[in-house]
Image (cartoon, rainbow, N blue to C red; front, top):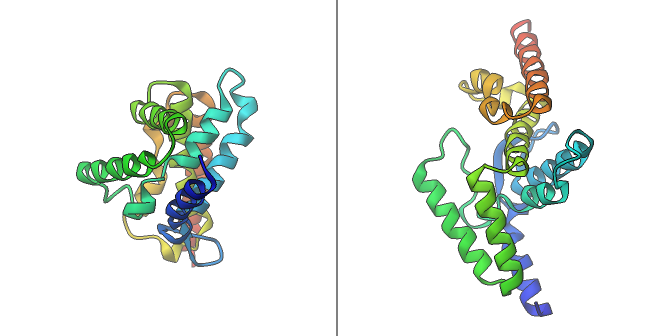
Length: 189
């Protein structure tokens, strides 16, 4: 990849720093897509000891690139996302990757295929952590940023994707307890 192509691609994905998510930070501002991907990557790095048999570097790569399409489409909260939105995001990813040299394009295309198939333990870990990062973010944000459906959703979101592993099930349960505590504290005000 020549320096010009490199800089051009970085400019395309820079939108991930600008595009905000439905989630809010603890300081009271909307979280960017890039911030979500960064913390998701840290989450994967920190749980490496729990999964010595997995290629954690691959999981981290999945975490870093999984929302590339949102540089084009913007974020659509999971509770609003339709099959058409998924197709649009897949199209955006293909378009972004098409500007990359063959080697990295092939590697990243295969990574997206693996993530979408959700068959490998690496893809399953990525997906469970992706769901759980959203719950962590909601638990950190002021509860006034929650919409009504999130009082229920935060208790169950990602549960099915966490079933594959005892550790992710335990983490999901701990986050559910944090959500319950937050909701109860709000009710006691």
